[in-house]
Length: 478
Ligand code: BG6
Image 1: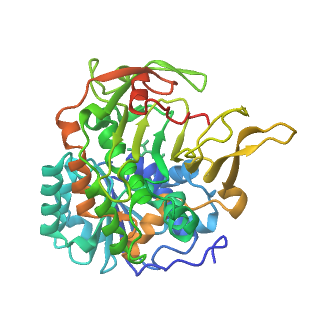
Image 2 (image 1 turned 45 degrees about the horizontal axis):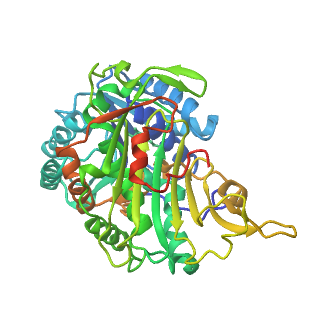
């Protein structure tokens, strides 16, 4: 048992190659995650952790970089014994990804996992390089988003990948699926029939899914200019949350059964009409008491950029279960608060017996699933206020992960790296999901509505309110 959890499988011996090991993702998340896995005995018993990058580093430099990354970003502090064990595995190779043959000298095992933490344009040359170096056999490949930019490019990418590796060796990451609270969505829905019985359009008026961030684009201005919020967050994280919250019960909990249901759900989402979308871009403002620049003033961003840092949209699902329920998705950078939540708003009672009584504040009954921070779930319903008069008031039943389980869940990347090493696809995205997700956004990407501006530190552009009219989005502060 680890922190009260049943022990996960120790992966077969293999080397782990992190391509792009000097970049942000590797430093912030991958290297600390690998360290924490080693700490818990969940790295393969034998095998190197090889960093591959353009940096002119030897093994010692890579060890220093890794130690700093862990010290700054790991959920556990560094323990000498663990670090000694982990750092003994670390090697570095400098290269631009075109000729992967020199890697062979550092590989110690017949199996290996390549984690490509690289810009999208580098993916295919590296994968081809692996094929040419004869390294495809025995390799699994973990890929970061974005997977293409639209349907044709995603299809081309999938076809090219399959020329080198079969689908069952390819792991497309959406790190949201590694979050404990996201996995809990399936348990919440399918282990609690009370909710599942009313999980349909008869009972549910709308489902709002929000990924709000106070951070700006920071050092990623150039990357963001080529992607924007729709490609960076909606196409993947928001659609995955949507799929899990709305899909039908799977045949069983196997990877293929779950992925098939998510795919089916995405197929029933109607292609989004650009009229149903609001794109926004932040201007300078104040976030957490600090003055911050507008998006167009960020490094690597064009002064007249039309890239969105905020997107809100209304979706329709053409299915027996969901016809008539609205699905509202929104995400934005430089918003007032960090909050990833799913709010399921139930229909009001068919007749309000209490219309003439004093109402303190009228709300609809809702289930709020807090993905992060303050991970948990709550049910809002109406109760009678104590006292002689009949006064109604919304009250909350709350479940909080920290309080109930008294443990901090592993980081998403720990879980995902481990699953890829043991070959479990459950929390990874299939080629069909990817292609359908682009299809849903096809018209918006071809014909994007103009960006409107919102001040950094605000709740986003007012224009997004029209998508929920005559109701309102749940407030970020609630
Ligand atoms: C990434 C996006 O996939 O997810 C970033 O590229 C975003 O723009 C990040 O900030 C959010 O992840 P998390 O886990 O902090 O919610």
